Length: 150
Image (cartoon, rainbow, N blue to C red):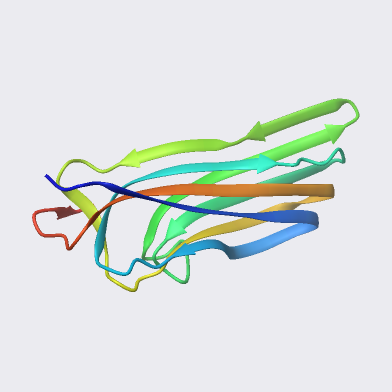
C-alpha cells in the first residue's frame, strides 16, 4: 500500500466591468519528483459579490498543460453568478467536486511538470466580483508502476 499525499493549490482573480479572461493561471505547483495523481477535490466559488447588476460565467480547471482544455487537462468545472439589485436577487452556482480514480489507476505527472489552476471567464458587471479556485490534489509519490493510466 502506498501513502497518499495531499497538496492544496489555490488562487483567485477579480472581475470588474466587461469580463473576458482566457486561461489566467492563478496558482501553480511543480512537484520535485515523479508523482501519480489519484484524485482531486475542487471548490470553485464566488466571494465578495458587489451590490451592482451583473452576470459572470467562469470555467476553472487543473491542468498539466500550458494550454488548458487540451491534452494535460485533469479537472474542469463551470460556475456562474447572476445578480440584480432591483429587485434584490442573486443566483450563485458554486461547485464543490471530488473525483477519485479507481484503485490502481492514476495520472502520471513527471518530475518538473507544472500543475496549474486556471480561470477563464466572460460576462459583465457594474461592480466587482471575485472568483476563487481551491484545488486539493491527492497523489502518491513515484512512477506509475503497478498502476494503470486514469
